[in-house]
Image (cartoon, rainbow, N blue to C red; front, side, top):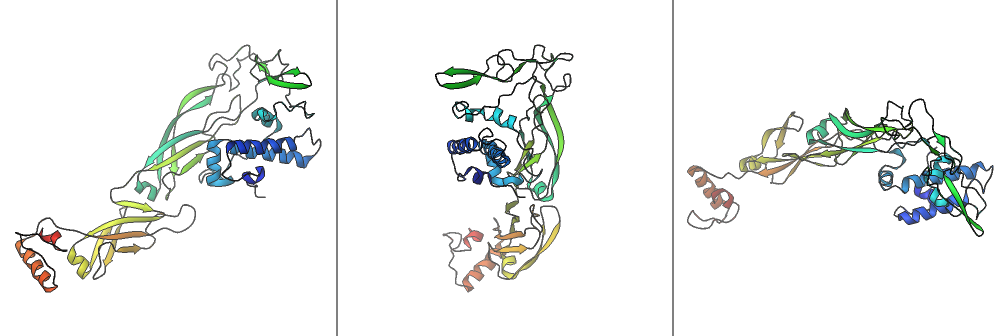
Length: 377
């Protein structure tokens, strides 16, 4: 079953501001809150659905990715995490949405007692790879190197010294929140002792200082498909930062930067090339051999009376379509080569021809006008 559009779920337009997105989510979250709808599976599903939409649209980078690719995700790697969201994640990550409403509206903020670290997914990482236009045409393999956070091997990513355990926070009794009453209202604030985690680590891992991760330099080879566009992003699953306290790792997004080529350019899936021809070749036509960007030889037929700037299309010799079948075309644009020097005989021949067609030119003592200025100037 296809997933619903995130903007449709929150009921906001695609150009909605971050404030409008937050307000829309807050309204839905309060409407479908599980304490307002006990035992209602449909309300719980809508509550989670709204949280998933807000989790993406409230993040600038994730929203940009979603606007470009939708639920499918970037071309290489296939889609969003799909891990879903549980209630603990929702109340922990978006707890500010419910601040001040716990006891006013008669439901709890679900701050459950914790005895140890809550696993959290690692952040995504980004890297840039430069490739030539030829490599984009043929596909290539490229080495990627970057820094990321790796799970500490000495504590297995827990942040806790071997042989010891975390302790429930005595200040908040493991809930991560401390309640304060002001008149009829009850408000919650993050526990200052444990920072909202609900536990403390009296004996952190000495290797990672209790952070559960260490920075490392990563290097590996990535396959770049033929037909890749400049600015495209490849998603490499689980190559981002390791998860916190044993959580799932993030992803690596590789941005492709295609360098300019001296001879060829690209328009969509078409490959564009200028071809210099002499004036006689344009007038009488010719068979000209050219070399495509991949080094293959092609014989091009120049028709008689071909003007400069004419486009000659060679079918299926352009870029492969990365999102489907077939290829673009190779488009040859004719250009007239103007020699800087001519022999005396060549000049006389051109002067004679200019007289026959009625073109006005001057000799070397005067100003040459018309087309033959380029030849005789």
